[in-house]
Length: 153
Image 1 (cartoon, rainbow, N blue to C red):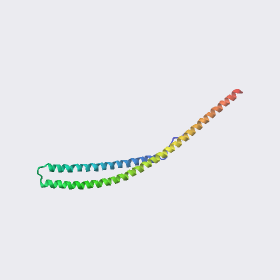
Image 2: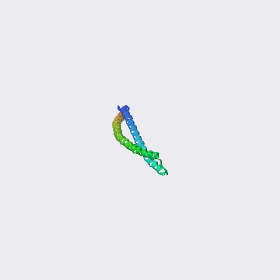
Image 3: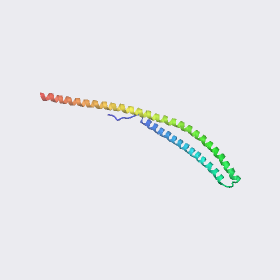
Image 4: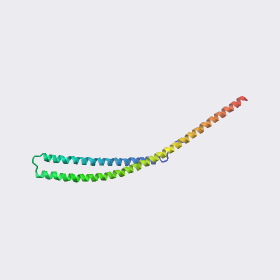
């Protein structure tokens, strides 16, 4: 009996590697989105803090008022920029999810082909084993029949 071998094992391993690479890219994109969300949350927290500090001060100078105003404009512009980056990141994530799904499908296809081949090999091995067992039984039966015939003579 020969060992089972799947001729596409190397291809399947290559496809698995490709799938892992694409999954790692997707994880980096998720990390990028989390970083954008964290930066947006940080900005949302800094703006009210700056306003509270200004209000808490009994007397504010023109420079302080101008700085808070500039920070507010910066904060609004930065929020818009972060929102645009997040939308762009979401688009890349959606495309990458499709890529990962395709790579996983390729791997599953090869795994199913391997399973079918393995099942076919097992059936052949079982058939071969049964044939050998049958031959051994018949050979023993023939020997015993000859012995019985020879002992009667």
